[in-house]
Structure formats: C-alpha cells, structure tokens
Image (cartoon, rainbow, N blue to C red; front, side):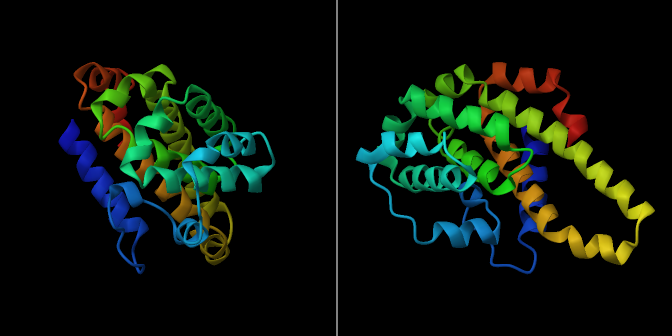
Length: 206
C-alpha cells in the first residue's frame, strides 16, 4: 500500500509542477502563489501565541499566521516546541476543518506544516490525537468528488471557457491533494494507522 501511495504522490507532484520549477522536497509542496507569499515571511518562535491568535481573525490573517508557523517548522529545533503546543495544533486542525473547502492556499499551508511532523515518530501521537490523518482523508474524499463535478461541468459548458477559469483552482487542488498524500505516507509507517487508511478505502480513492 505504501508503495502505491508513494507512486501517486510522485505523480501528483510531477503534474502540479509541470512548466514550473521543480519542488525542493515533499515537505516543500506548494503552488507558486504560496511560495511567493512565503518568500518574505519572518517568524519568531517566541511569538507563537501571537500567531495562534491570528487563526481567529479573517482569512488574510489566518494565512499570515499559517505562513509564520510554516516558517518556524523549517528550523528542526522548533518542531518539538510546536508539536507540544496543544493550543496551536488544535487551532490549525480547527481552521483546516472549517476552511479547506473554500481556501486552498490556507489549507495547503497548514498541510505543509503538518507534513513536517510525521518524519519524527514521537510526534505521531499528537497528530493522531487531533485526527489530522482523518482530516486529510476527508479532504481527499471531498476533492475527488469536486473534481468529478468539475469534469461534469466541462461537458455542459463551453470547453474553452472551462479551461480558462479552472487552471489555477486545479493546480491548488492538486497541491492540497499532494500534501495530504505526503502526510498520510509518513503516518502510514505506523501499522495501526495504515490499517485505518485501508479501512477508509484509501487505495480505491487513489
């Protein structure tokens, strides 16, 4: 199963970066828009509480808070501090659950944050507690259904017009899906988690 997941992740990464610079790693999965907005972010580990507060503000502030946290994850020494912050992880899980259907950029940034943590097995318990894997599965199920709807729309409207209005949304959707799969691959190193994914029929979804 893990091999199948890795193959799909590779395919999604390759497709979402077509005609763009290649991604640096699976933890750097992002759309060009997210990369550019993250280029000038400066974050301070001592200001985590301030970044958490941003998750209760409007969309722009939520995006800013998520980008600051993502910047902090680039320093390995910060990871344990971040994952042990129950308020932070809970706030990100809540925002992802509430906003991913309407804000690809925010959802992708939060997933990129979570992707950093499963590389370290001691952090799996915290991710499991907040049901991060289940959130990813829910997102994948929804996005696959949304993709089917978009495909149906193409058949009922002018194909050229459909191609012109969907490319950015499709790229962002692929970014989100690739991030979810990357996270699930890392979580699947735990056999119990892998079995849960099988029971959720992840393989047919892929």
